[in-house]
Image (tube, rainbow, N blue to C red; front, top):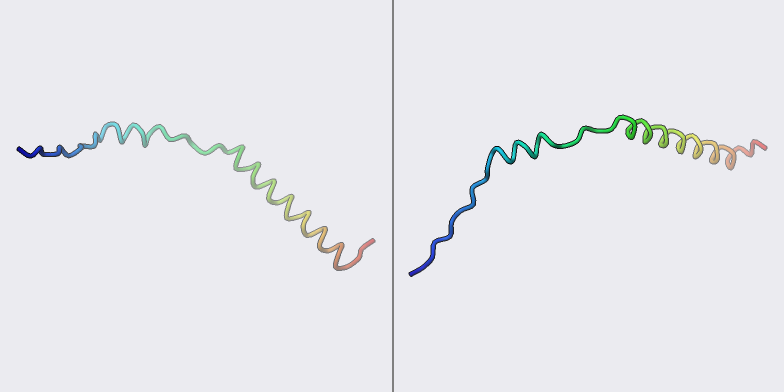
Length: 56
């Protein structure tokens, strides 16, 4: 009188649909992040060089 558990079957069609629906990376966001990183590094170098070499 024991109940047997049914194993869940993964539907390969649903898995393929989920993989195909992943959005592509937004190039504008990537370029914006790179620009932000470069500007922050430049500002950091400027501030550190001003503190170390006393340019003013």
